[in-house]
Length: 324
Image (cartoon, rainbow, N blue to C red):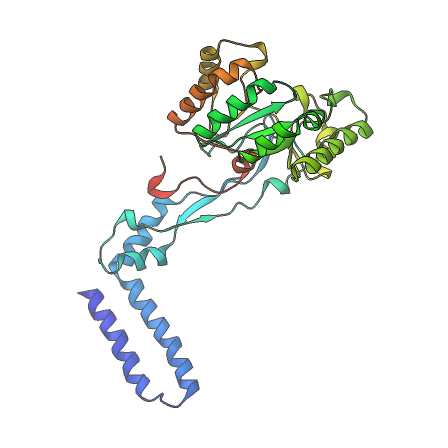
């Protein structure tokens, strides 16, 4: 009843002063302002509007800034979320009652982003993001790639394949097959060297040569670099950064190069996986045989599986009443 009277009074007031405004543009402009303010006052006095305001804090989550952690090094930020009070009110006002399922949410950005940080290796995504990524380092194992790609396609999974430059040169058709399946392409150096022991000039050559052959073969420019065998020093990270590439490591290792029994490998990974995990693998017999169950296991734990770029993205996967 209070709501009805307030709205009636506001519109009556607007109607009365509107009569004297005909043919007067200044008065019309003034009245439009008064009208907006009156509607706003009536809306804010509406118990429904007040209810949405009071409930909004319950769903609010602050944005998380990107940081350089002492242990995990660079960790991307993650968007926050809050209720869009105006949009939520518009959605509920016809019913005249609060409905949490009709709340409208909007994301809020962090103050510090991954690109704002000094060059640092990345071992994992933000721990608040229920997504993982499969890092496939390719310098050999051609015979296992088609079956791995088939399994990923079956589960609609996109991964990041880090390609050795000399491998791309020798296997352009396989490289194109990976790209055509919609996977992200990364740089894995040219000759699988120990990057930590190279001179700055050789580091630059390895990265540049690989980018050149990937660009010539696939017409894409890698955004991410994975050091062979995980060997690097800070200068490697710095040089990669000058080429607009982030240096990617991992937080969970399949250790598939040791050819473990596929079921054991899968269980080991599922026991260690965490939100934001970056899972290292290669085209091996163990991974080819266990990939189907690994993907099923990851999804059953509630994880989305995306590329490195998707994992680094600050966008939320869900928010508000849809969150766990």
